[in-house]
Length: 317
Image (tube, one colour):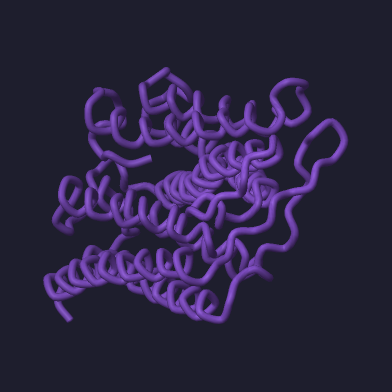
């Protein structure tokens, strides 16, 4: 196949990926709407704090499991076609397929989807997060296709280094993992408020929030993914500094991209430290994690597309 045909195949797979993820969102909605009964109200423990809810997978009926399997199948198939987007883009350009914002953002979204799939396979009850992960994924891919798309082409001279494979790959991986962690913290904030109201005597609801996994489970997902992603992001920042010294003759120059990458590192370090700090456990720590996700998105979009700096030529990590 020629480079043009490989590039065209990559673009076609991108559209197929959006369609598959969109169908997965519909299936996840059906799973929540028709297949899951809200868990019973938590019992009070100690000073009125709600106990961890029982295994909520047991409250799902056969129809819910069927919709969940369909949704997961579509998600896994979509992840395969999305990987094909990058593989065929790389074959068309004969380079690593994250040399511009379109490729970088597409790869980041793929890492987030794969991270969710791994958690959902390990803990089926967490499949109910699928709607809240896949809906932003679909939105992100649509925006990527509309505003970040770039024709397949060679790398700019400054990116022709083996550090591209090291620094940018780890930045993509860290960002994708933090994306799932941030979504889990947002859902934790919503669910924990609901559980607190139920613990105060309010009748359990029947809406989407009542059908989410328990707040404790969501908090564990958020924390574990952040724990996994933090050393990867740390390595990405260090690798970027080493590459900067090789390319520009200095390890650090407070370029906007460098600055916000460091700010993100500080925020996530604070989040991981928060559970050991009085007053910052639970919801306080979750808010720090949400701020971390906001900083990462700001670093990707505003810093790359609006501000000017040494990283502006590439639009990548």
